[in-house]
Length: 286
Image 1 (cartoon, rainbow, N blue to C red):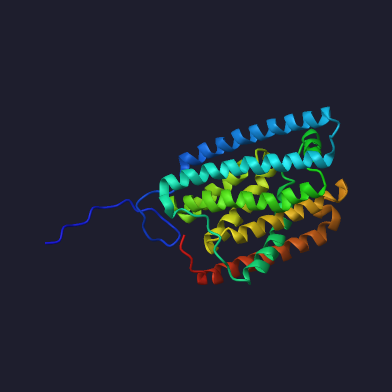
Image 2 (image 1 turned 90 degrees about the vertical axis):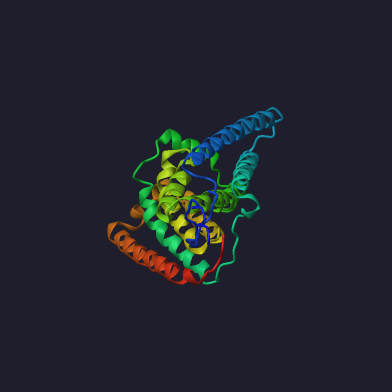
């Protein structure tokens, strides 16, 4: 007579199959990861201050050198954070853990780029909901120079590093522990919080929802890197405009701005429809 098999705890994953051991992170461990990020950001900031002080003493100080130190501090801080998250993930899942760089169809890249450009029209308005105080704005202008290293940091390095962490590790684990909607929401909140300021956090939350949804549909960090890079590139482009021309509403005027928003909404909705319909053909196991 066959003996009944013991019940196992069923946890949601990408393919609605079952796994026994929960993945990293869950609701509790994601809070610890957030404080790890704060810790390494503090260490990175201290390192920058030391390097800048040394450069000033040697009369080497320059905007380009400051941008180089910022790039190094950002890169090494997040590499340590990613190493920490990977170690925790492997402790939970063993050798089965891996960040998905799965290939995606060529059609996806122009679709996500165009969809992101349409998304930016709405997110640009969101950024004006919570105006940045002049003192904070001056600080950001000082940190975010318009030199080549700052451009590389914002448009290339940040999209790769942050997508590896936020979607490749964090959302991947959350999708194994929670329903897709809950996992994407938590990951978007996490993505917003790691910006460590409310002025960037609000638009980051909404783009985080889109990034999370695309990752869930495609099961790859590659589309997210493209989306993130497109979003950051457009934001960087606006920095080269005069201050009174960094608002689409001011540039276009009300009638044309409304028309642009309607067109952007149609384009974004169409892009999401294409991704949702055709991503079902992407058969990748994570």
